[in-house]
Length: 400
Image 1 (cartoon, rainbow, N blue to C red):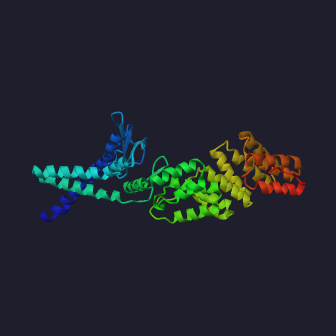
Image 2 (cartoon, rainbow, N blue to C red):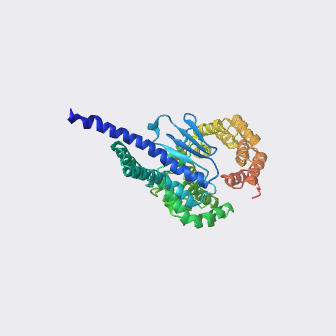
Image 3 (cartoon, rainbow, N blue to C red):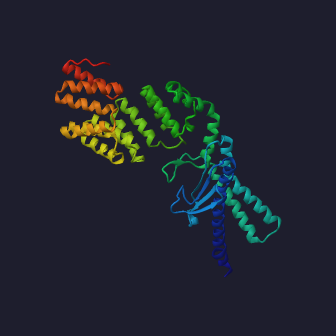
């Protein structure tokens, strides 16, 4: 009988104690983040146990006016959890304290508990449990390892583990003298100078928000080769967040404006895979389909945009153009007029209206609408080429 005591009793007991210790460790970990957040900020602090932001199917517990808990009744779901607090007016130093406390607070409580139990020579069961509790708290040191794999939140945003956020905060503190003036240069539309500063940052710590800003700066400068070199370098950097939908949209735009339409299509599709409601990517893929004379596919994309954004003037303007190219002239004209009614300053609507009249042989209306599109936005895609085509056909005299 004694031979079966260890496997039948001791092992299950050890497992139960470890599970209980893990529940306590997770709770103390989140409290370790929440307590300094309450001290350093004046806003509400919300703790989630068992989810990354689920409120509807979680139980709610409010402690005072500023601290709230949302927790799953099933404690086995507590492997996931997070704390949300206002980042405003929190210095890098304070943010580092908030991050480090998640791991250090359970260890501190476990050490104090262990010391009390052994100092008072309490019974062996409590001694065993406090030892297991300390092991559980030490096990959480793994959270200090920087993992670049993003954690998807319920609201569609991403966060990262404590180690990555700590590493990012340290890098931000080191690079703050670069980031702050770079942002100011970008906001003042000094894009080339902003790029020079952003490129001085360690690529590992360029997050997706900065990644997008640098890409758009290259687009503003029309430096497509520079933008391509930058994004290719960034996509090869290890231990940084995966590129998101907006990044792939801007990469696709760089390739599209460089004339690499098939490569642009691949990146637009990657963007849409990550966010099926990214209307910028869907619209631009539809436009690229038109450039490749795949008008049925273009119409499908623009219809998708209209389903998401029923008042998208850009989508109506370009679905009209695609329909005209398929021979549905009057239906396409109606869509272009719809686009103008939605936005009287949509240069693509007037450009496409000019092309409609150009195909109809109506020089006067073609010239008027192409000129109007140019006056609204001289960077409207291929507007100068279409104006030149009109000149060749009718001897027009556009004002450029």
